[in-house]
Every structure is written in C-alpha cells, then in structure tokens.
Image 1 (cartoon, rainbow, N blue to C red):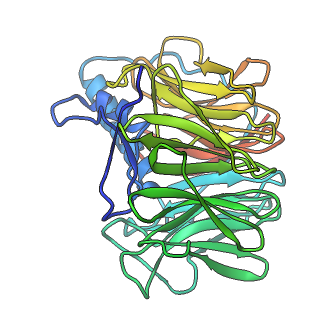
Image 2 (image 1 turned 135 degrees about the vertical axis):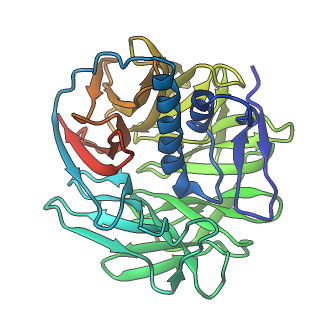
Length: 396
C-alpha cells in the first residue's frame, strides 16, 4: 500500500501531513486518532498539547454516549512527577543517561519556551539571547534534544527577523546560533549525538531538506534521490540519521542515511506518520509508527532492525492503537497506546525481548512517554481529568 502525503507550500515552515487529514464532520475520536501521526512543522511544539485537547474532547463524547472506563492497567516502577513553574503544559523531549531532561513548555500566555531539569530537581527555563515570541505560532523557543555532555539543541524565533525560525545550540560555553547557509526562513535542529553532530531540517529551494552539522560546524545538506521534501528526525552515535521523505508522487517513505552519506529507503505495510518522529539507536535500529489505512483506523508502532526487518508493535489487549515514541541503545521501545473506549492515553515500554511493561502515572488519564535513556528511564507528560498536565520521569 502506498503511503500518501500532501506536501504543504514553501511560504511557511511546514512539511508532511497525512492525506487522510481529519474532516470537519468527523467525530472527536477520529480527529484524535489522525492527529497522533501528523504534524504541521510551523507549530511543532503545539502538537502534543493539541493532541491532549482532542483526547479530552473525545473522552467527553464517549462519556456522554454512556461509555464507562475500563480497568486501569497495573503499572510497575517509580514515578517522579514535576511541574514547570508557571506552566500547565510541559513536554519533555529528551532524557540523558544521567537523568537530565530537556524540552519545552507553554506559559500562561500560551507561548512556548525551552527548559531543562537536573537530576536533583533543579529546573531552568530559558530562551536564547535575541529571541522573541511569535503569538501566531505560539513560538519563543523549544528544546528539542540533549546529548550525554548536556548540550541542548533547539529552535527559536529571532527578534531581528520576525517570522523566521533559527536553530540554537547551548553548552557550557554558551549559546550558538545554527542557521543552514542560504536557508529560507527556517533552520530546525532536531537531534544531537554524543560527539556533537547535529541533524535537522531547513527550508531551501523547493521544500524542506535535511542537514547534518558536524561537531566543528560544517554543514552537509541531503535528500533521498526522489525526494521533494525531507524530514530528518534522529541521529545515532555514529552519525546515522533516520527520517521520512515525500517523493514526486507525494508518497511517504522512511529512510536511514548512513555515516558515509548513502541513503536506504524503506516502507511499512501502511501509511507512515510524520509525528512522532522516527528514532534510531546505536545499532541502527529504528522505531516509528504507521496507520493501516488513510483513515488511520488502526495505528501501530514498528521496530525496523538494521538488517531491514520490520516488526509491528502493538500493546496486547482491547486497544485502538499503539504509537512508538523512542528507542534506546539496547533496543527497548517506549510510547503510548489508547484503549478502544478512547477514555485515556497510556504509556508502555516494550523490551528488546518483546515483553510489554505498562507505564501509567497513578490517578491520571494521560501518560504520554516521549523519550527514554540507555538505562530504560522514561520521561514524558501526564494529565488529569481537568486537562492539567505535568512532566514525569519513570524508572523500573
């Protein structure tokens, strides 16, 4: 089955949206399902918040129709739940081996800022110097990834160029702006590896392109040979990059770019999603998600091993879908799933042996893992019935 996409115009920093996008007359739960695997690059930080809002609308619809919540899953492990001061919606994006967390949060004015949290609980909220806030897309800045050295990469709105999106890198030496040479309004670093190499996306001639920035600041642009739009998602310790792209027929494919620059294309049995991003570990294994059909009536996670074997991931039980969010160096995958009653969103870890562990913050209706480190610690966000959300860390 072909993975159909429509590619949005080049006048705004946007890329890939599933062609089965939700219509105005479909119910709240169908809209929630389709939002799980699509995103607008102009507002990437808003996706998780919008997703939770759609789940709340779906939950209200289901309860009004007389649906009753099923049995809450048993969850093992230990949780640390923490708020970001002044925010009702934090979204962690990365957790290091030492337990440092970075991400973004929405403030009281619905504007997005970066943050990091130390293992001792210290939280720092920040925007790069020279940044401003753009209420049109909610953007000020966003922390996208952090490596083992504590270096964070992300994006921000520069005050000197309203409407533009620049990248940033912050380490012990301070802030560095990351702009791909000749980029047309957007450079978005999305991932950084242990050596300091950065993967990301920029708007250039045509649509979106991928880039690699070496630790010494040298940029390399890349696209698969038949691509009209490329979305780099993740980079592993050796410099291999995973992502997706749209071909000239607007079909979507996955790809892995190796350290030597060669690109391998792959396809799943259904419709690949552009969100959540694919992730690649040190072995070259990739995690991601796809829909069975254009209507996204059933969602699966997947694991693609370095030899090209693709294994679907589905949490056992009466569930309407499973989404893979991250994979660690050992091959464990974390993500979320939603029961068929559409009254909650739950977390899981799938071990490298194929066993499932439920990750579910007590008393909450949403547990949304976003990232996992080498030892299996998971971070993400969790929300109660009122829609108030906090961040969490889980460990076995």
